[in-house]
Amino acid sequence: MAEKTCAEVIIGGKVYTLSGYEGEEYLQKVATYINNRMNELDAMEAFRRFPADMKATLLQINIADDYFKAKAYIEKLEKEVEMKEKEIYDLKHDLISNQIKAESDEESLKQLEAENKELLLQKARLEAALDDAHLEKSASNSKKRD
Image (cartoon, rainbow, N blue to C red; front, side, top):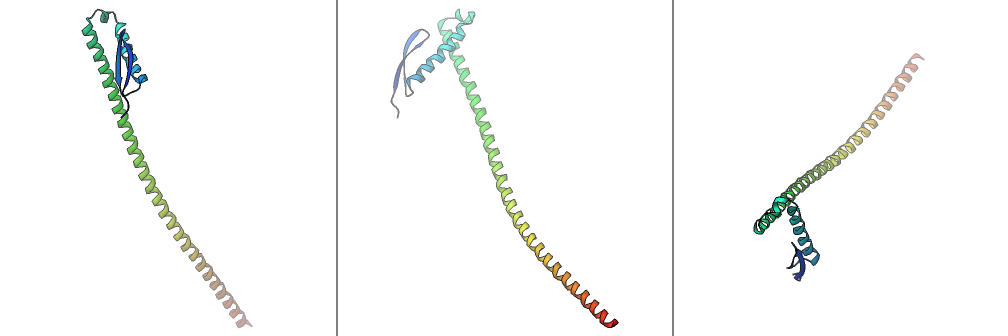
């Protein structure tokens, strides 16, 4: 477990000692955030007239509002990430399916090429046999004429 850190911060013009397991820089950042929210509210004329407890409550409401908006935004981003991960999964699945199909198609192509080569050889043999048969017939016809 990390070591506990203490930091003196100024919030609303008062010095507070904050402690936590985060670094001093983070604790100062938290104080700065609260001061900025207080300054935003103080900029409104009506807010300055409210009693201190009402100001504190409004500050808390504004901080809670920021929290819930940030949480909703994170949930939205998480859903988008989840959708993107599903899309990636589907694309990978499609890729694998296409690779398998391509391998199958390559195998079929090789078989068809082998069959084509065999058919071409048979064609050449048949043509040669036909040519031989024509030659023999021509030779036999020429001997009959003689």
